[in-house]
Image 1 (cartoon, rainbow, N blue to C red):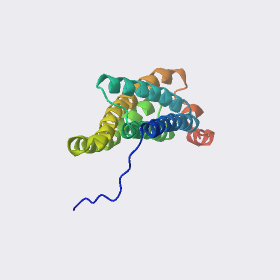
Image 2 (image 1 turned 120 degrees about the vertical axis):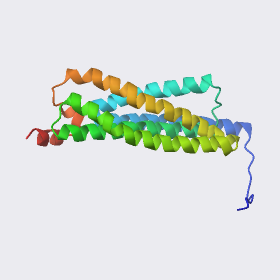
Image 3 (image 1 turned 45 degrees about the vertical axis):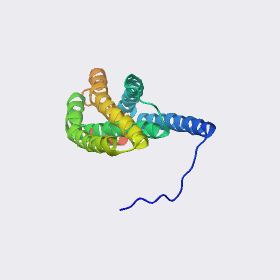
Length: 197
């Protein structure tokens, strides 16, 4: 199918810098809102996920600097999208944990089962996105490649933080609580009460 140029636009240096600043602010605000949501909805696991998310952001920036990724507007879009995917992995894990706790399993067992059962979904969704990213890097233009590279780095780091860092923190705090967990893990007191009855 032939590509037809309908319009083109030149962006000056000042406008480009302003767009970059706005995009960075949007990314920081989005991350902050996601952190607040995770803490409010998932309580203690959400707080641990928020810490893992901050580690994720630091690692992503460090790796991007190490491999020489230039943060363009498309690159920032890739980073923001990968933040969403990092949170998605934690949501899958925590929902799975809540299901296990509702079935009467101990907090330790629910934590392990949550990570174990959520992993195939996390792996498959991230793998399919990584395949798309490889195709974009291989065949795309520089603008598209910047997006694909930052998204690839973000996905790889998000898998590491969700599966390794969040899991390690959950294993560390689980012994501090009663065997069946409490409202800090189930999220809603009503759910916890119906589980115990």
